[in-house]
Image (cartoon, rainbow, N blue to C red; front, side):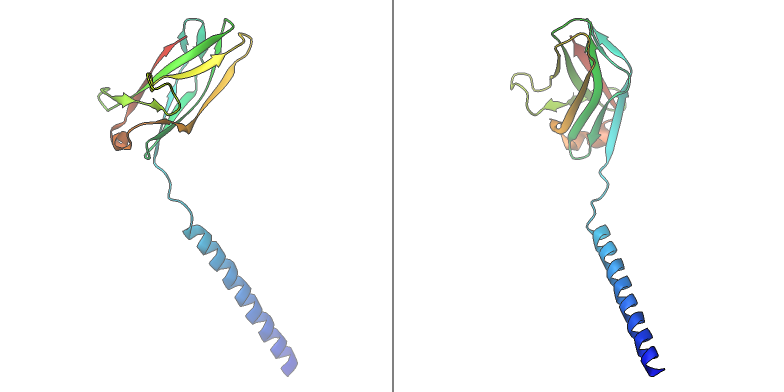
Length: 152
């Protein structure tokens, strides 16, 4: 009987230790997690410029760190076209606060984003990473609207 109690005691102690380690690991992982980043997303309807079309659902997502990303689809009815886009950030009254800047753009036009479209038979998925688009993060709380200028 004494041996059975020792065995059960050892099993109970081992189970408690394992449970304690499991909860500690989970707690540690949670404590190391990142805080949710504040974002603002602006979605656009179908837009046309010349022979080019940007389909409905294209969206810019801005973060409180001053980074921006884009996801959309564009096409053209002619070969060899390009969709050119400038993104303005605006306050609650629609006043322009500034433009998104392309971090890898020509220094003479830092606000222009370009998607080349070699074939008129293909739609092109356009993704701009948050390492490629930025704005002054101090403006983030003021941003309520966006508008796009475009050219084909």
